Amino acid sequence: QVQLVESGGGLVQPGGSLRLSCAAPENFFKVYPMGWYRLVPGKQRELVAVIAPGGRPDYQDVAKGRFTISKDNSRSEVYLHMTSLRPEDTGVYFCNVGRSPRNDAWGQGTQVTVSS
Image 1: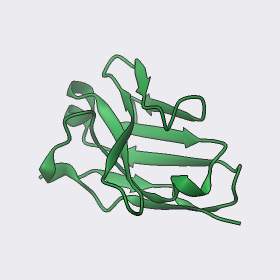
Image 2: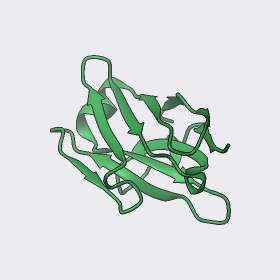
Image 3: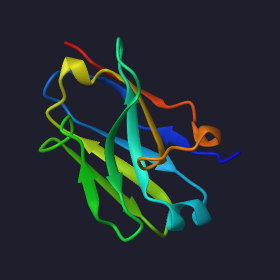
């Protein structure tokens, strides 16, 4: 089983920002594209953004223009900087392999709540 640890969630007002972090094993991080996913109420878990091992980002429509995915190779961490947050962004955010998540790598996620 792969241990991925998400952090950085919290309660934020609409229009606010949050920065999520994901710590991954070093070998995992260098080989696989890493993605952020979210589980929002009433919907299936969805991909939000992906970053390739070489650093190229790719965003789903829900993230374009508002979210930025990045990583720190030296720390084996992936980040999701979220701005202009909306109530519909409320949910649990997870990291995993980008586009082909591993069933043995889902962590606890980090809760993001956007509310006034």
